Image 1: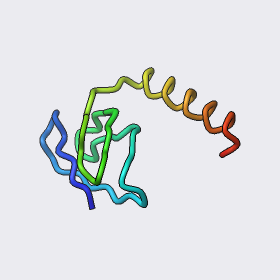
Image 2 (image 1 turned 45 degrees about the vertical axis):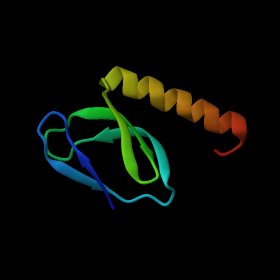
Image 3 (image 1 turned 60 degrees about the horizontal axis):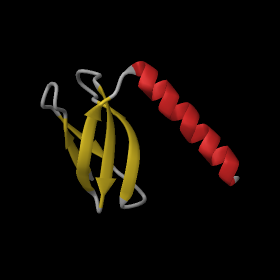
Length: 72
């Protein structure tokens, strides 16, 4: 389990991943703040605030990327 401390409310959230790397959205379970996080080797490397509009754009870009690579 990877622990993620919310920069906004400082509550601890946990994630379990099948892979050791992840880049994507994370929403705090308590205050509902939204972040774009980067995990590498099961450690938090980056955590940047993310707006709902940025999340939608990120999801659309990710969807197009998966479709182009044949993963969808």
